[in-house]
Amino acid sequence: EAGVAQSPRYKIIEKRQSVAFWCNPISGHATLYWYQQILGQGPKLLIQFQNNGVVDDSQLPKDRFSAERLKGVDSTLKIQPAKLEDSAVYLCASSLDRRGAFFGQGTRLTVV
Amino acid sequence: QKEVEQDPGPLSVPEGAIVSLNCTYSNSAFQYFMWYRQYSRKGPELLMYTYSSGNKEDGRFTAQVDKSSKYISLFIRDSQPSDSATYLCAMSAGSNYQLIWGAGTKLIIKP
Image 1 (cartoon, chains in turn purple, green):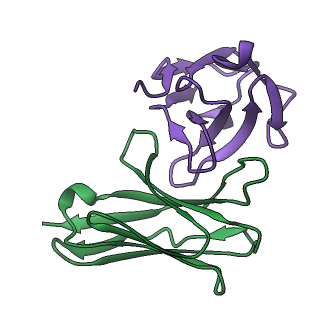
Image 2 (image 1 turned 45 degrees about the vertical axis):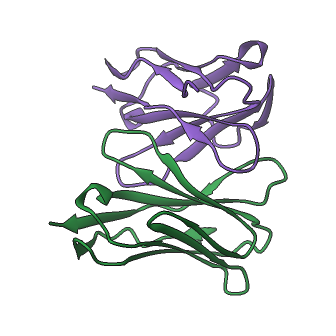
């Protein structure tokens, strides 16, 4: 079974530029999560989708972050404009049921 | 107070020792409990899943849930240097699949 695919693995951008991350979840997984993880901390949920719909985006900075999940499969997360404090690892995960989520390798973003 | 508390460590033990990793939580509605292992520069990997109270064993790993004390543990027997990683606990009330995370404990197994 293929895992969660994310791209790119690494990205360096200047502040105020825009960036987009892509995620392809495990086939059949209805729930998709985007997390932000800063070194030494646990993952922070940015947005959770159930199929096409948003379940929770309460911690998504909506003035600069946006996310969509087309046809209930792939998802993109965009940051525009980026700030220095957005430097982090962005993790995508998917789940089939309540027995846990499966993560991709993450995208390491550096904003300079 | 955070919903899930986890000592960040680092926890350093000699190879072969039994390791005990713990999380406490405040929300009595949590029913689903998970442990993840995260190596440096990798995504978290699901290790163990437990529903409600009790123990679950998988090879050298044992997960334990004590709902009366709001306390969960992960035990690693015969620890190996390859077990060196950050261990994250996560839990869910189940209603919307939302996961609440601990901050992670960094574990170092010394050869």
